[in-house]
Amino acid sequence: RGPGRGGGMTADVAARRTVVTCPHCGKRNRVPSVADGVPRCGNCRHSLPWIAEAGDDDFAAVAERASIPVLVDFWATWCGPCRMVSPALEQLATERTGVIKLVKVDVDRAPALGQRFQIQAVPTLLVLRGGEVAARQAGAAPVAVLRRWLDDALAEPKPSEPNPPAEKEPS
Image 1 (tube, helix red, strand yellow):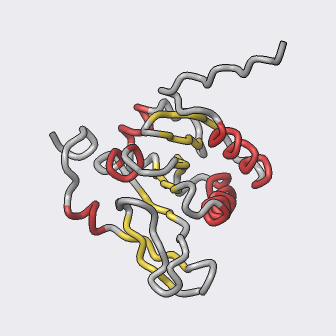
Image 2: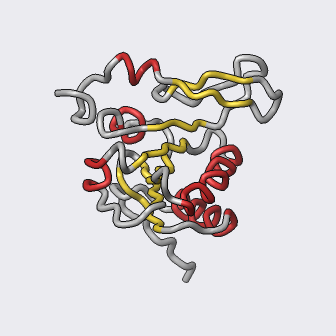
Image 3: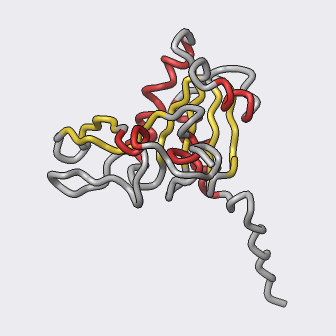
Protein backbone atom coordinates (compact mmCIF):
# COMPACT_ATOMS: atom_id res chain seq x y z
CA ARG A 1 0.00 0.00 0.00
CA GLY A 2 1.35 3.41 -0.91
CA PRO A 3 0.96 6.85 0.63
CA GLY A 4 -2.65 7.95 0.90
CA ARG A 5 -3.77 4.32 1.17
CA GLY A 6 -2.69 3.69 4.75
CA GLY A 7 0.83 2.62 3.77
CA GLY A 8 4.16 4.22 4.54
CA MET A 9 5.08 7.70 3.49
CA THR A 10 7.83 8.66 1.11
CA ALA A 11 11.01 10.33 2.30
CA ASP A 12 9.88 13.44 0.39
CA VAL A 13 6.79 13.80 2.61
CA ALA A 14 8.78 13.21 5.79
CA ALA A 15 11.41 15.75 4.71
CA ARG A 16 8.98 18.50 3.58
CA ARG A 17 9.10 21.47 5.92
CA THR A 18 7.55 24.92 6.18
CA VAL A 19 9.38 27.87 7.71
CA VAL A 20 7.33 29.43 10.52
CA THR A 21 8.23 32.45 12.65
CA CYS A 22 7.70 31.86 16.36
CA PRO A 23 5.02 34.26 17.63
CA HIS A 24 6.75 34.36 21.05
CA CYS A 25 10.41 35.03 20.27
CA GLY A 26 10.46 35.84 16.54
CA LYS A 27 12.91 33.07 15.57
CA ARG A 28 12.33 31.23 12.29
CA ASN A 29 11.81 27.47 12.55
CA ARG A 30 11.52 24.67 9.99
CA VAL A 31 8.29 22.82 10.81
CA PRO A 32 7.80 19.32 9.34
CA SER A 33 4.59 18.42 7.51
CA VAL A 34 4.36 15.17 9.48
CA ALA A 35 5.40 14.66 13.10
CA ASP A 36 4.27 13.16 16.38
CA GLY A 37 2.93 15.74 18.82
CA VAL A 38 3.05 19.43 17.92
CA PRO A 39 6.02 21.49 16.69
CA ARG A 40 7.95 23.62 19.18
CA CYS A 41 10.30 26.54 18.72
CA GLY A 42 13.94 25.48 18.84
CA ASN A 43 14.80 28.68 20.70
CA CYS A 44 12.07 29.32 23.32
CA ARG A 45 10.33 25.88 23.26
CA HIS A 46 6.81 27.39 22.87
CA SER A 47 4.40 25.60 20.52
CA LEU A 48 4.49 26.83 16.93
CA PRO A 49 1.64 27.33 14.47
CA TRP A 50 1.50 24.16 12.36
CA ILE A 51 0.93 25.05 8.72
CA ALA A 52 1.58 22.49 6.00
CA GLU A 53 0.71 21.70 2.41
CA ALA A 54 -0.64 18.38 1.18
CA GLY A 55 -1.58 16.74 -2.09
CA ASP A 56 -3.08 13.55 -3.43
CA ASP A 57 -0.05 11.44 -2.45
CA ASP A 58 0.53 12.64 1.10
CA PHE A 59 -2.84 13.85 2.45
CA ALA A 60 -3.33 10.77 4.63
CA ALA A 61 0.04 11.23 6.34
CA VAL A 62 -0.15 15.02 6.63
CA ALA A 63 -3.82 15.50 7.56
CA GLU A 64 -5.79 12.34 8.28
CA ARG A 65 -3.29 10.82 10.70
CA ALA A 66 -2.47 14.10 12.48
CA SER A 67 -2.42 13.94 16.27
CA ILE A 68 -4.55 17.11 16.59
CA PRO A 69 -7.63 18.42 14.70
CA VAL A 70 -6.86 19.68 11.18
CA LEU A 71 -8.28 22.71 9.39
CA VAL A 72 -8.06 21.88 5.67
CA ASP A 73 -8.09 24.74 3.18
CA PHE A 74 -9.02 23.64 -0.35
CA TRP A 75 -7.87 26.56 -2.51
CA ALA A 76 -6.56 27.49 -5.97
CA THR A 77 -3.86 29.91 -7.09
CA TRP A 78 -6.26 31.69 -9.47
CA CYS A 79 -8.94 32.21 -6.76
CA GLY A 80 -9.15 35.77 -5.40
CA PRO A 81 -11.30 34.88 -2.36
CA CYS A 82 -8.82 32.09 -1.52
CA ARG A 83 -5.98 34.62 -1.37
CA MET A 84 -8.16 36.88 0.80
CA VAL A 85 -9.05 34.15 3.33
CA SER A 86 -5.53 32.68 3.58
CA PRO A 87 -4.21 35.28 6.08
CA ALA A 88 -7.31 34.77 8.25
CA LEU A 89 -6.66 31.01 8.32
CA GLU A 90 -3.02 31.56 9.22
CA GLN A 91 -4.18 33.91 12.01
CA LEU A 92 -6.50 31.20 13.35
CA ALA A 93 -3.68 28.64 13.20
CA THR A 94 -1.47 31.06 15.16
CA GLU A 95 -4.22 31.81 17.72
CA ARG A 96 -4.78 28.06 18.20
CA THR A 97 -1.13 27.00 18.24
CA GLY A 98 -0.87 23.45 19.56
CA VAL A 99 -4.64 22.94 19.13
CA ILE A 100 -5.05 22.74 15.32
CA LYS A 101 -2.96 22.08 12.24
CA LEU A 102 -3.67 24.09 9.06
CA VAL A 103 -3.25 22.03 5.89
CA LYS A 104 -3.50 23.76 2.53
CA VAL A 105 -4.56 21.73 -0.53
CA ASP A 106 -4.28 23.26 -4.03
CA VAL A 107 -7.23 21.67 -5.87
CA ASP A 108 -5.51 22.02 -9.24
CA ARG A 109 -2.56 19.96 -8.00
CA ALA A 110 -4.71 17.49 -6.02
CA PRO A 111 -7.69 16.62 -8.24
CA ALA A 112 -8.31 13.28 -6.51
CA LEU A 113 -8.79 15.02 -3.15
CA GLY A 114 -11.11 17.57 -4.73
CA GLN A 115 -13.20 14.72 -6.10
CA ARG A 116 -13.05 12.64 -2.91
CA PHE A 117 -14.27 15.54 -0.74
CA GLN A 118 -16.70 16.77 -3.43
CA ILE A 119 -15.18 20.23 -3.65
CA GLN A 120 -17.54 22.27 -5.85
CA ALA A 121 -16.15 25.73 -5.05
CA VAL A 122 -13.02 27.24 -3.59
CA PRO A 123 -12.23 28.09 -0.95
CA THR A 124 -13.79 25.17 0.89
CA LEU A 125 -12.73 24.50 4.46
CA LEU A 126 -12.99 21.24 6.38
CA VAL A 127 -12.23 20.38 9.97
CA LEU A 128 -10.91 16.83 10.35
CA ARG A 129 -10.96 15.16 13.75
CA GLY A 130 -9.52 11.69 13.96
CA GLY A 131 -9.29 11.69 10.16
CA GLU A 132 -13.05 12.25 9.73
CA VAL A 133 -14.85 15.37 8.50
CA ALA A 134 -16.34 17.17 11.51
CA ALA A 135 -17.34 20.42 9.77
CA ARG A 136 -17.46 21.98 6.31
CA GLN A 137 -17.58 25.62 5.17
CA ALA A 138 -17.72 26.75 1.53
CA GLY A 139 -16.70 30.25 0.52
CA ALA A 140 -14.65 33.01 2.06
CA ALA A 141 -15.76 34.64 5.31
CA PRO A 142 -14.34 37.24 7.73
CA VAL A 143 -11.98 35.98 10.41
CA ALA A 144 -14.59 36.45 13.17
CA VAL A 145 -17.07 34.19 11.34
CA LEU A 146 -14.37 31.59 10.64
CA ARG A 147 -13.23 31.70 14.27
CA ARG A 148 -16.77 31.02 15.52
CA TRP A 149 -17.23 28.21 12.95
CA LEU A 150 -13.90 26.62 13.92
CA ASP A 151 -14.59 26.88 17.65
CA ASP A 152 -18.01 25.25 17.16
CA ALA A 153 -16.42 22.43 15.13
CA LEU A 154 -13.74 21.85 17.76
CA ALA A 155 -16.34 21.76 20.55
CA GLU A 156 -18.41 19.02 18.85
CA PRO A 157 -17.68 15.35 19.67
CA LYS A 158 -15.69 13.46 17.03
CA PRO A 159 -17.95 12.17 14.23
CA SER A 160 -17.25 8.58 15.32
CA GLU A 161 -18.00 9.25 19.01
CA PRO A 162 -21.54 9.05 20.34
CA ASN A 163 -22.92 12.20 21.89
CA PRO A 164 -22.37 12.29 25.65
CA PRO A 165 -25.46 11.31 27.67
CA ALA A 166 -27.62 14.21 28.74
CA GLU A 167 -27.42 15.07 32.41
CA LYS A 168 -30.54 14.26 34.38
CA GLU A 169 -32.21 17.09 36.20
CA PRO A 170 -32.59 16.57 39.95
CA SER A 171 -36.08 15.36 40.91
